[in-house]
Image (cartoon, rainbow, N blue to C red; front, side):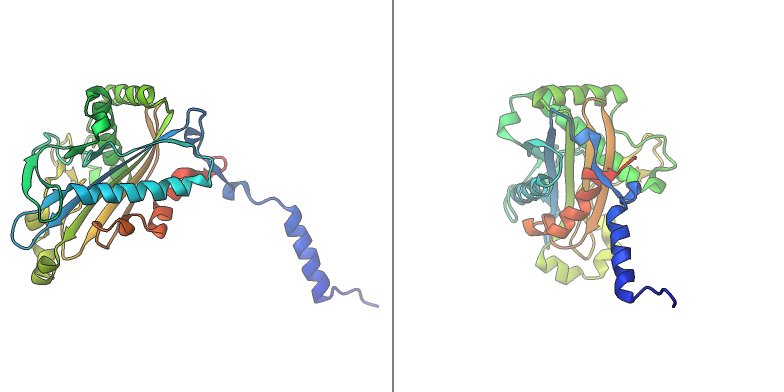
Length: 299
């Protein structure tokens, strides 16, 4: 008599083997050590949105940027609620905090779309609670710019391969800024979320169409490129305009105690960034933040 496994018995044996075998270590996710320190994490959100009207030049809009930052902060905090990342402090310190050019040239700014336009340097808005603490504000400003540019360089290394550096601050200045932020906030790590977006008015979108693509940089860059130390190549922090609405989103985990960028991620997408639900959409948040919160075990 031949001993044969029936299909049912074979299935039972396979399930038993799977239940006793541990998943591969390389696939087991763990929270980043820098984000689970006892002192917890400071979350800051820095949104910068450019509006392109039909006739006049582009300008940054404060109210929409703040609304988008609030929605994105809430979505980010909710995402981390289920992880071991301890978001102890949440802060929207400014609008357009990460510098777009090294000399911080004045930018065209309005409180709302179609409101009066003025000219001012970055940040174009500062949280009232920080207006009296120039040292803390300056440190957040330094880290935001540095982390944003480093994240972009890491996402597109070929764009900066010919330059000596894409940093905006010396290592000493970054360490000093990190120490100030750690001391003021009482936190050991920083999660930085930075967004730059470009929004066309409905009239301009209909008028320019595909022709906008050909004239892209000449017509729509509200802030100039960031020239690297080498002077030959550049990295654009602000999203160049085009025939469509677009956004560029950066998320980074920064160790304040070691003054090091642990991990970062950059996501590009369409949709009108002036709408908070576009910036804080569930799929966007998951795509942006997953690698920040977790890493494969052993990494």
